[in-house]
Length: 269
Image 1 (cartoon, rainbow, N blue to C red):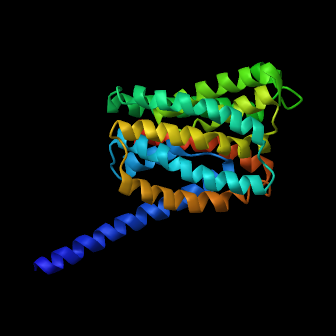
Image 2 (image 1 turned 45 degrees about the vertical axis):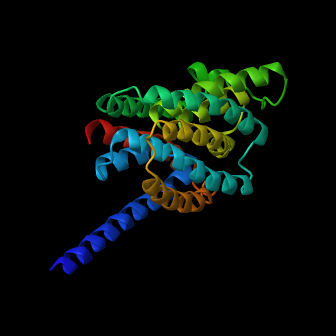
Image 3 (image 1 turned 120 degrees about the horizontal axis):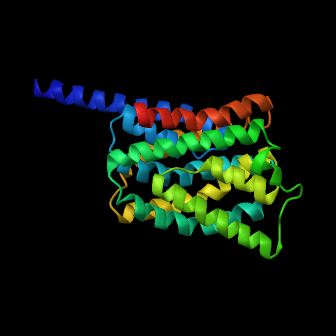
């Protein structure tokens, strides 16, 4: 009888692992398509669907993004969607902000983190909606017609954008993808396609240092981390192949839908 219980336990455990891998692979395909690191959606899935404590989900998903975005960024680079200098500069400053943000997050109660992270995702959805459907109104009328590549203004903007997005990512365990995409388009003059690909490069150092910050606070589950990495990394590489091939309207809708989906799960799940 004990032997059958052991077999049943391992079968159920294996089924649980396969469920995580399958769901995250599907999400990885979608996130690679829209150029998102996807930590907000991953956090929602881990906490609501699989019952993982939110701070562990925050640290694990943000850390996993280092590998997810490595795969996606390489694929986007091969597709010609990455502006290297802007991505490296913003990501460099973002790494410092992400480490500080991870330490801030550890001091916020779990119940509040559910609501705050969900609210941030809703805000990102609104910003993305305004940008992709009303690109020439309000603050978006300030978008530079030329890519900013050098000079003091470039480094000032890279520092401000990087630190702001890094703190946001580290505190709430998200990639801050829409915020990064918007800053790249507004302050650096990148096209939507370039912003999608370059954002994945920016998220890479943010995820590494933010994940390190969570790890030093004891909020990183290594076994869960491996599962998340495998599922998302495989999916993100495939999804990135379809960004340039998709109908632009479909890409716009998907960019708005991703944060809405994650925010809804966290607040109402």
